[in-house]
Image (cartoon, rainbow, N blue to C red; front, side, top):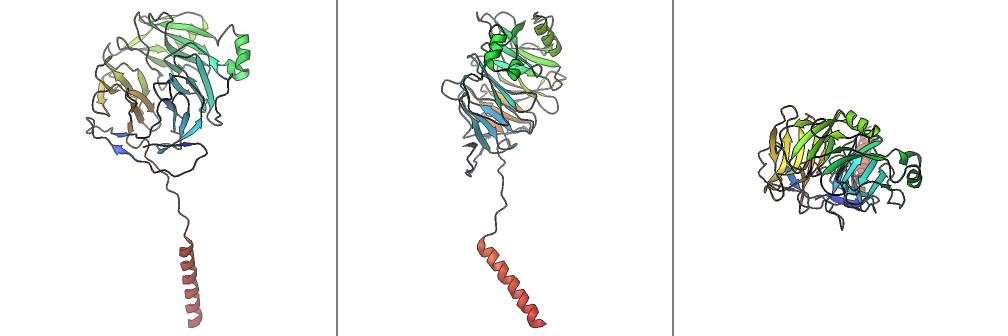
Length: 360
């Protein structure tokens, strides 16, 4: 299991893991069952997360924020709490230490400095539209995938979060007419569903999924930013480039890109339909491999860590797996020499000295 502690706790708790023998046993990617992984807080449904530049996972369960001790460590520290919501996303900003926590079907967007984390303080949150997922377009612009208010389709809106850097949220609300500046930049087709958003490693393309038809398209991030700046909206077909064909990939959207460029996509073929985790060749746009940690073709919510190439996969029943080694490293302290060892060493030195004196 994963060791979970408050940030001021240093108790040594042994980490236990169970190697899961599933359909992907023959794969190069194997999974372990995480017996003590954080569970969603009351009124929350999922645990979301990201990673820090040094490879540590950062997780949020709808109340508490957890940070891994070090990359691949078996220990998670609770560094802050009180960030309530049904987690839509947790993003680490381009600065490498500011976390943005999107509260899903609530309207809060929380920020947390992971270099100096504190429990939630009322009044520090930003107000944004309800949302399903988010991604950075630039250090100041955040794009959200959300249902339109009439639930007729999903849309992308962009939020300018720069105001919070120069003024408290109250001032930014007074400076801007309402919540932080937002603008619809893309309307998905009628009947479309939201899914994860992901910028490619170069920061030039945004991968957007219609979870209803399972159609994946890419949009130039420069075009999305321009649409925001000019109060215009892009067209799903004319401005987006199809990646694969509708139905090729699972519904969850792109969770990340592996070091070799392959895409990681979780989800399923639809409600109550077979699911898994697909590894997709970015050039050929074909599914290389389908991973199934539990061995029953479950729907998986996926958190991917590109630094360590680790996958966290959670079923709809909050049973969580991770790629082998993602939470297995336990630091081995250098033990201090016991007093009797030191005493024996001292006696040995004395004996050597006496022998040398006798021989002299």
